[in-house]
Image 1 (cartoon, rainbow, N blue to C red):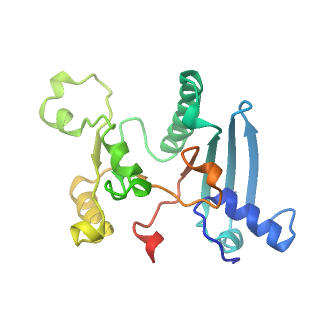
Image 2 (tube, rainbow, N blue to C red):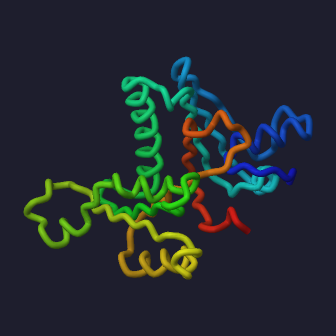
Amino acid sequence: MFNFRTDLASERREIYQKANKLEQIDGIEANQEEINENIKVERVKITNENGAKAIGKPIGNYITIDIKKLKIATEEEITKGAEILTNELKQIIGNHIDNQGEILVVGLGNIYVTPDALGPKVINEIEVTRHIINYLPQYVEEGTRMVSAISPGVLGTTGIETVEILKGIVENTKPKLVIVIDALASRSIERISSTVQLSDTGIVPGAGVR
C-alpha cells in the first residue's frame, strides 16, 4: 500500500492511481454524481482484498459528499446538502436493519479540542427516544424507532479506551446498529467543513493517534 495520510477513500484511491499510473484498481469500483455546481457525490466500493490492501481501507462502501463553500452557503443549499446526506444514510441503514431496529449513535472525539469536537457536538442534536419508549410509551407515536446516543470522551480525559466503553454499552443495550460520528483527516484544506464521508465498514476509535 502506498503510504499517505487521509481518511477519505476517494482521496486514497486517487493518490494510489496517480502514484502507480493506473486507470483502474483491481477490487475498486468508483463513480461520481454531480448534483449541481456546488454538490458532488462520489461512491467508492471496495470489492476484494486487493482493493482493500491497495488503499488501506476495509471491503465495503464509501460515499463522499462534497458541498463547496458550505461555510457561506445559503439556507437553500444547506437544506439540499442535508437532504442528500439523509437519503444516503437512510439507504445504508435500510440495508442493515428494519424500520424498528434500535440504533445507538456514538459521537467520538474531544469536545474541548475544536478539530476533534464534531462527534460530541452532533450528539447534542440527536433526538433520543429509547428512554421514552421504555418508560412512557403512551406518549410516543406508533412506529417511532428506539434511538440512544452517547459521547464517551477520549482516553486522555476518561482514562478508559473508548472501545472498552462502547463494548460495555453495546453488551447491555443491544442495539441493532451503531452509527459512529467522527472528524476525519483529509489531504486538502478545501475539504474543511465541506466534506462528509459515509461508510458501512466501521471505525476504530483512537486509530488516528497510533
